[in-house]
Image (cartoon, rainbow, N blue to C red; front, side):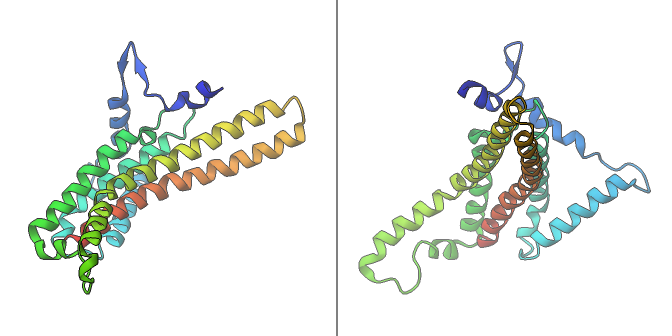
Length: 226
């Protein structure tokens, strides 16, 4: 039971070779580059959503922070499309892997921190010691602020991994319970099936919300350092 429950989170392979790279690259096919003078409805809606999201996310940034616009939009599109594709039957969700999420979170977090120390050195160092701190508490607060700084990428990765993994496990468990209850009680099985549909709709929302939250937190880290 445990093996079947977590089998969908194992990295897939074909002929002994991992195909995670192909799965990670697949979402880029879903966003075609417009090549016509007048776009179709799908591309028009896609461009409108990207403009709306970028305008809302970059409103708090100065000119230096807005140079990250392409990176942030690519990040939210990648995470959102990967999460949605992972809801398809017999598919693999790369964002359930903590290693991959850390691979996204650490470089982005490090980039914001390095940007802060490069362009706002005094302000970045001032975050380690709040103004008006009593002298005996200075060493302890510096240690606490340093730990909180280095824990930010871990929090980003763990939040995304936990939310996506929990949703997939719930769908798997409730789906299995629905199949098991069909031969026992059709009424109970129907109620469980309705719960499964509602949970699936919720997971679609969670997939998009988690992509937005991940990108928004990276944007806030960037705002604090530019």
